[in-house]
Length: 375
Image 1 (cartoon, rainbow, N blue to C red):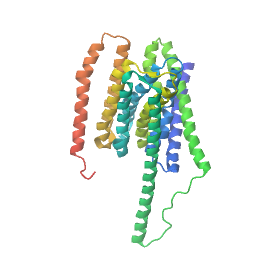
Image 2 (image 1 turned 120 degrees about the horizontal axis):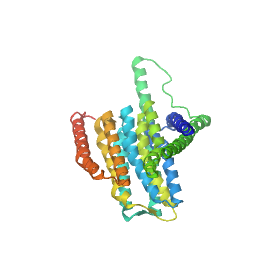
Image 3 (image 1 turned 180 degrees about the horizontal axis):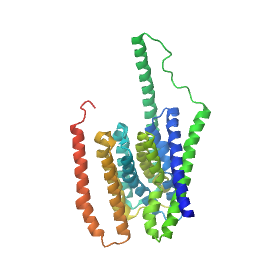
Image 4 (image 1 turned 45 degrees about the horizontal axis):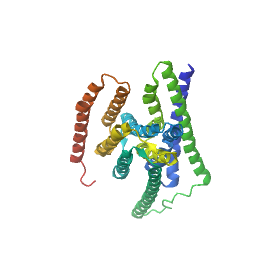
């Protein structure tokens, strides 16, 4: 009974924390002259990726360094296929052009760079520091772009209103530049963001610990708990925040949160962990040969999905969830040395993958055929 109450309380806190976080982030974006997309790519993404950072740092200093890579890479695959997929099943997710033209290619490029860095079986301190420096530079670039676009939008609105007044012969005070927000107002929205992140973290911990205890009571093995409850649990903040942002019609923030979280997982989680690790961060062979390539494939799949109609439709969301289910099923079968592994592999390679390619290629070609040539 106590375990069920713990799980329920954790889930409620996740919802409340995500709601507070999204509200504060949207208002903070307005105060800072930044778009919700960039807030999602930066502030929200960093906050929702904090569980992965905490787990990875803890693993390094508890002689379980290999867990750090698996945690970050596994979370990226889950973020793309499961979280975006589930969110799109609830509400089709709008995708901004900046994501397709800039942020998604950067995410793919960073994943390719990670694969190349890990080819020697480790991430050393200098490589980790390079990741962190690139992340800081990229965030600074995003903020500059966002503030310029916001300023241009305000100026365009002022000109449009001036033309309307000129045509109608009316006069008014026009659109004023938003007054500089007071320190109290800024502090309030920042407190909402920080408070939402803290509630998310506490709710996540309650939910995961309660779920692990329940799994043990039911006789589920530690391996299965690690593959399912723990791996999904550290991504609960991204999942709940993305869904809440979609419900509140802040879908650009929702997509930005996932793309930004993936960038943070590689550049911040692995970068910081490798920078502070007493020794070079070891990368297991399985991660190099399977897990990182799967994460890269998931990122590449986003290109045609995001491009078609500039949104993630419900059927595309379902496809992403099916792909993640196949990935998780493969991990479970490998871990349990199941006799069904060969059959399952054949079904995926000669069934699921070809169907996925046909659907994505066909959808992309249809989108190109009906695209507006002026767009």
